[in-house]
Length: 134
Image (cartoon, rainbow, N blue to C red):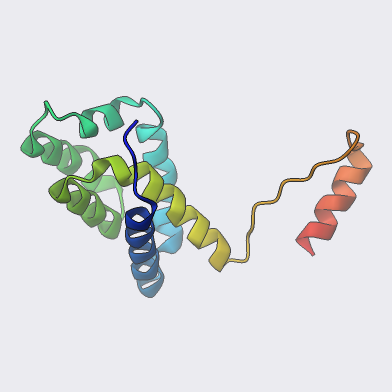
């Protein structure tokens, strides 16, 4: 796996999020991101194809145009093309993940991990979840 610079990842993810928010497309892009993550998952065939130096940029562009352009938000399509043109497709997964974090934070959703000395019963889990959601 290649090193992915967190500064570059943050820059692209924040730009995508801000543009999506301005256009009212955050929910649509979030749905598209879920689809893309399924296709580009670790060692996914699409990600391997897009990362491969043996495959020409033109072939990668043709695949993106044919397989993804009709099915994703134009803003996300433009990001894919930009990453391809800049030779930064290896950043795609990290950018998509960071976009989701930014979108969640904007909606007030935070990830939490609960560590307990013993396993919580069902009632305790529901009570804790209710308290955290309040």
